[in-house]
Amino acid sequence: MFTTALIKPDQTQPGALPLDLFAVIASLKKELNAVILAHYYQEPDIQDIADFIGDSLQLSKAAADTNADVIVFAGVHFMAETAKILNPDKMVLLPDVNAGCSLADTCPPDAFAEFKAAHPGHLVISYINCSAEIKAMSDIICTSSNAVKIVQQIPKDQPIIFAPDRNLGRYVMQQTGRDMVLWQGSCIVHETFSEKKIVQLKIAHPEAEAIAHPECEPAVLHHASFIGSTAALLKYCQQSPTQEFIVATEPGIIHQMQKAAPYKNFIPAPPMNNCNCNECPFMRLNTLEKLYLAMKNCTPEITMSEEIRLAALRPIQRMLEMSF
Ligand code: 13P
Ligand code: SF4
Image 1 (cartoon, helix red, strand yellow):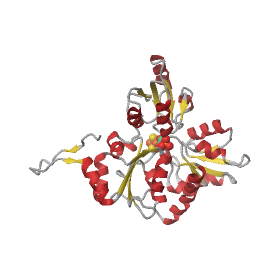
Image 2 (cartoon, protein in one colour; image 1 turned 120 degrees about the horizontal axis):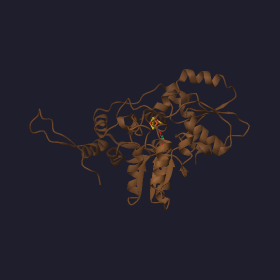
Image 3 (cartoon, protein in one colour; image 1 turned 90 degrees about the vertical axis):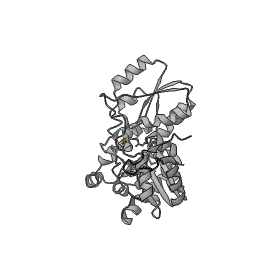
Image 4 (tube, protein in one colour; image 1 turned 30 degrees about the horizontal axis):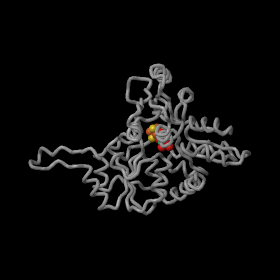
């Protein structure tokens, strides 16, 4: 059941009724023939109203398969952009156009073109957390849930560039035994977890298992008994007999973990400072109110040149073919 989300009445208009956001969004959805896709890092209200919640790979597949006319993408820019690349004729809305990604920003197209030119003969595998321009310069896209599987399918004598996340790249190298040239990008959220505080939590909760997203630094991954994408972490918590977990990824996922296993305890891995920097500041720019306004006004809409879209589509399609 949805919780009720009310916008307070406008005091300058006596008699105006409060707006039930869940109800108006549901009716806009019908009016627009829209589907709402949400990432696990979105605020709980958005997760609760979404038609589909998933990790990056599941959301790309959902975007590729939808029959809706409008895709409301509650996630960050590169995710909505991927939906547009797959659906040029559909309208793709992002509740806050500034919902970017610090990792995608570490890889500007000009610098990446030079990096590629400095490594001739390399196959370029790019993590989906990058701009359409970087995708257009790549041979295959991957996500955190299929990166190992994709690299394992590449002939052993084929040199590989992996971009932009060095932590995921390093993890894939360990899992596959492959050497890869890594672009040195990283995510501000997954680099914020404190190894010291995670060890302290493990001491205070000796029965708890630490689980982590592969974007975390090696020192944090070292303490994790399971490493995986957001969807894989969720599945693991449901299936494991363990009752308590220390979760080293953005804490938005805990909403679904708690729903899936209400009697288990989920402890968000703490950041180094006494701040909320384990919450992705970009994902959290989207709110239920902005989602409503985006649907009401059909803006902000994701657009891109057809040239970039077609070039970015090829490596995404290759990923979808290679991840079954
Ligand atoms: P997932 O592939 O688990 O959805 O990760 C996306 C992401 O942005 C992690 O920071
Ligand atoms: Fe980007 Fe990190 Fe936020 Fe994921 S958590 S969207 S990688 S900034």
